Length: 239
Length: 48
Image 1 (cartoon, rainbow over the protein chains, first blue to last red):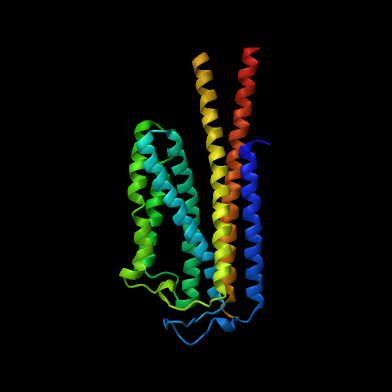
Image 2: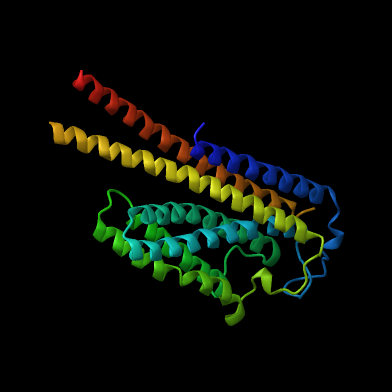
C-alpha cells in the first residue's frame, strides 16, 4: 500500500471513529429527556427553546457549517498560492475544496432551515441578515464550481484564483452578519447547555477529518483525470 | 416529543446528502479508472 493510500485509509478510519462517537453521543442525548434544554414559551426569548428536542440539530449543523468555512478558507489559501507560484496543483486543490464546501454548506443551510422551522415556525426568512448572507455565500461558491469545470488553461486558472480570493469575503460576512444585522439565528442566544460542548467538539473533529478524507479522495480522482488527459494527448501525438 | 420529527428530518437530510456525495465520487472515480485502463490497453496493444 502506497503512502497516499495509507493516508486515505487513515483519514477514513479516524473520521469514522469520531463519527461513531458522535452517533453514540447523539443516541445518548436522544434517550435523555430534554430537561437541560428549557422550553419556556414562544421564541425568541433568550435562553429558551420553543423546540428543545430539535435543539440537538445544533450538534451536527454547526460542524457542517464549520467544515464549509474551513473548505472555503482552503480555496482562499490555494488561490493565493496559485497566483504566487502558477502551479496548477494549487488550482486543483482550490476546486476540490470548493466542491466539497458547497456540499457541506448546502447541508448546513438545509439542516438550519429545518431547525428554524422547529424553533420559529418558518423555514426561511429573507429579512434575516445571517440567512441572507449565507445564501449569498452559497450562490457565490456554486458559481465558482460551475465556472471551474472542464479542461483548465493558465488564463482560466488565474481568473478562478482571483474569483476564489474575492469569494472568500462572503465567509466572514456570513459569520459576522449575525452581529451587524437583524437576525434570529440561534447563535445570538446567550445560553447553551454546558454538557453539549464536548459533543459539539467531537462533531467538529469528526466532520473535519471526514472533510480531509473527501478532499484526499477528490484529489486522487483529479490525478486520475490528469493521467487520462495525458494518455489522450500521447495517443493524438502518435496518431 | 413533537419536535423530534424535525431532528430526524435534519439528520436524514445530512446523512443522505453526505452519502449521495460519496456515491457521486465513487461513480466518477470508477468511470475515469475504466477509461484510463481502456486507453492504456489500447496504447500497449498499438506498441506491440
